[in-house]
Image 1 (cartoon, rainbow, N blue to C red):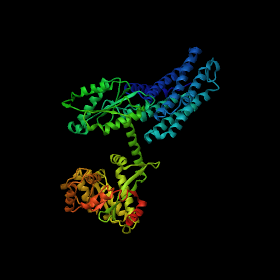
Image 2: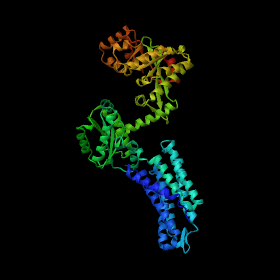
Image 3: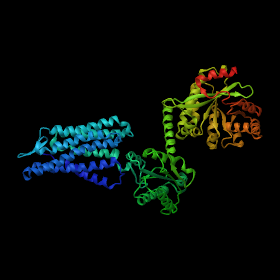
Length: 635
């Protein structure tokens, strides 16, 4: 009656598969729990499919009651399997938190109703019946079986399509669609070829697709460091969104890059593996994760004694980590969530912990930093700025504001500085002091710099600079931009495409850019050969000295506004002497931050050639700059 040629080999493969799943370490997250449940239920379904089918073929050897029990168990696990595949889709798409209790009850209805109708069959015979002639299908067999299967498969496919943005990439989307289409095909074949027992084989294929796409332990466990990885950490935190009481302890190796250089990459990795084993064996109530570049995160209940745990870890780290003949000593930096925090979101807490561990604690070796609500808010502000910068740079929406530079003796406008400004998607302005450090950190400063230069060149091309009294435009170069080896070529290309005289562009670099002298000299030499001129910005704020200044072809030095303000409030001989020294070296001088007439007069008296500041004009949008020039001429 039934053909077993497909189900027997499928069952053997599944047994090996389930055994392997039980052996490999798995992070305790919903997706892995459901997947393991599904694999076990699938094994039971296959067993019961074989056992019940054989019993139905030999119905004379069994009582009707025994046949009903065997078939009922098969159908119950059959319907549960359909629901578990749908539930697994929810976890893969991370939408399990989004469904209300009512929606979850709706998801239970098809398989629960199908089980009730089927199990009551010995009285109603609606789905199947055991008669004197053996197993017989009931009038509602197709409706109950395929309505249940169809509901979950189609609902899963719709969910994947609608929520595909929740998946990390197109490969994951293909996997999610792939296993659901496999189930749909298996359901169709079961309908048209019921005696072949094909659905079990297609369910096994679906399980394998899910394993390869989502549930492979290698996605979550790093054997190299004997710890769960960052991917597992993110999934785990997503699972505990509904819980209030959880705490993180994170630590990183102080000066990790330097230590890696001291011990070598291979030995350091072996040391990290020993640390991972120690954490897993010593703190069994906590889950340990490795988060790149020598950082570990421990997650536990809100009432853990974190100070005791940190003390034990520090005590262990006083002794060396030994691999073969290498003894490795590490100093740790700790971060933990403070007990008095009011923000309960596990995800928000984790993001702040990781941000602090990355950006702050390396300043003091062995420090313990307690993350507060303010750290979370600051981290989220930075994330918001990074997203805004991505949107701005991708759509070339960096705005250019121009601030006039005037002669110190006549206050006639002679030049302008091009400054970057950005707004978010709602039109809210973000201040330069906030977005520039983030842009330098994530590399967006390179795209922003190119956009500013391009728009400045376009402005020069479209306006009569002689009538405006403008002789040059200063464009800022960030220290991070000097690390871009294609800087000279890119900037030269932008100027050439605009068709303007490259001599109209003066590039401002800050003293911070002068730290890496070799890179600085090489870039400036190449760009000077292409016709660019250079201005040193914010002198007095950074690291430069006169010997280094003599080696770089600056045409102008801008004195930092803090130096200017300090001198105007407390005059001495230092700044006038410095100004005369610069002038003797052939530099012109610009005083920044001029806010009053008295400041302007004093800077002119000590020898500054140019002035810049709010006394003359704040930075204004490009479209308003021409009117500003006219207004300054009238005054």
